[in-house]
Structures are given as C-alpha cells and as structure tokens.
Length: 350
Image (cartoon, rainbow, N blue to C red; front, top):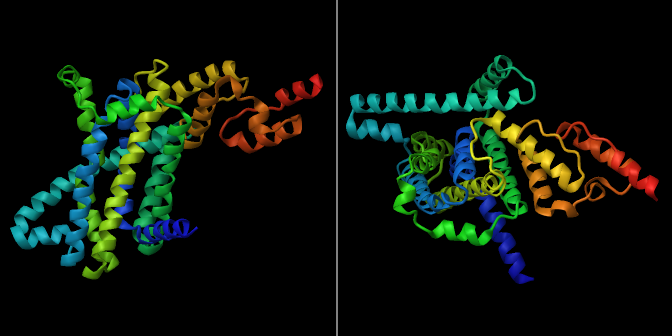
C-alpha cells in the first residue's frame, strides 16, 4: 500500500508540471509526422524501429537544452541570437524559420483537407474554417487555458499505444528491430534511407526550440523551477517518441502484414482500412464499414484483428437485438450503417 501511494504521488507530481516541453514534443506527431510513421510501418514493417532510440536521445537533448536556456536566461532564442550575432544574422535565420514553418503549416492544412474529405466535407470549406479557428485561438486565446487544453489533447495519443497492444504484433520481432542496426543492403534502398531521415526530420523541427524557449519565458519560470522544466521537456520527448514507435508498430502489424505497402494520403489509408474491415467481417461476423482512419476506428479494428473469429457481435454490443441496436446507435458516428440483425438471428435461434 505505501508503495502504491508513493508511485501515485510521483505520477500526479509529473502530471502537475507538464506544460511547454510536453506540448512541444507531442505537437510534432502531427499529420505530416503520422503520415511518415505510417508509411514507415506500411512499407518496411518493424525494420525502421531502430530510429526510435537515437531519435529519443536527440529530441530529449534538444528539448532539455531549450528549456534550460529559457529558464536560466529568461529570454527567447531569437532574442539571444540577436544579442550574440547581430540583427543581420537574426533576420536571415528568422526568414529561414518562416520558410520552414510555412511548409509545416501547409502540411497541417493538407491533413485537415484530406481527413475531412473522407467525411464528404470539401477542402474549400474545411481549410478556411480551420484557418479561422487557428487565427481566433492565436489572437484571442488565453495561453494558460490553452496550455491545459493542449496537454489534455496530447494525452489522446495514448490511443495509438493501446491500439498497438490490441493489434498483437510480434513483440520478439519488435524488440529485435528496436535494437538492431540496419544492414548496408537496407541503407542502400532509397526508400528506406529516405524514410529513416524523414522520421528524424518529422520529430525534431527548428520551430520547436523557438516555441519551447519562448513558452517557458512567457510562463515566467525562474531558475528554481529548472528541475521541473527539465522533467517536462524530457518526459514529453520520451512520450512523443513512444507514440511514434507505436504508430509504426500499428501499421506494420496491420497494413504491412496484409500486403498494403503504400500509403499515399489519409484517403488512401481509409480505403485500405475499409478493405481490412470487409475481411474482418468474414472472420468475425461483424459488419463494420469504415469511412476514415480515425483513432477510434484504428482502435476498434485492432481489437477485431487481435481477437479474430472469437469476437462475436454479442461481445461488442450485447446479447440481444435491443442491446445490439443501442450499441449500433452509439457507434453510428464511427461505423455506419449498423443494425441488430445479428441479435435478431440469435434471439430467433433461442
């Protein structure tokens, strides 16, 4: 009992100090990052998992350095560059940062357009609305309130970890590729090397250092808070890399295993998941129609994949027709259409 109380207190302590470091690390698991990790898992299975270890070390060092600099100096990174190297150098660096951020922002809106098109929403509607919401948050949003919201949203990535477990991958193979250095033959493959570099680039971005340091200064962290800022930065980095690894594992255990080796965009991933659902219908007897690769759908499909034929409708929605109809009504937004025919057949058999 004392040990449980001790670890509960430690966990609550870590959660209480999460902020800029945790947000910054996890924000890079965005549409571009998820696409990169998904492509790695779909094309090469578990073989690119070795990138997670050096990536975790590099990200943790970069995040901790930015956090420490912000706490000790009380100044943002751009201000320090200007003081040390002058206005001209600062201008050139900031121009390069704007160019990098522009590419990043474009990829985010591409992700918005592609994902909502799966639900029949035109990109000419979704992108302007998303841009307006971002503008409103930046101009009128309260940072302290937004920080709490962003920390909460970052924890939603736990769905990928749960999904990876439910997908029941070959954990021995996962462990092997996690600690095995790739061969020269693998590194000579253009696609393999391209994705290896892309994974690292999708995880460590220039804007992170500027944002993290500025956020810590904005938060008013003093040198006595250095330890807490370091914990925030390192914990966020490790959590972000673990999520990235599980995205690779999920796609390797599902798409790669069943021969779906190419993922071009979110719509293509949705189509592949729909084909997977049809195959699972034949195995489990559950009629599931997929209209987009959301976290909930990935979670549900992986559960089906893990249980196979042993998972029957009554285990998901209840043992009678009424229970199945209620469940179908609840899941209608994720898996339309659905009916209680399985329960009717079971009731008739009784």
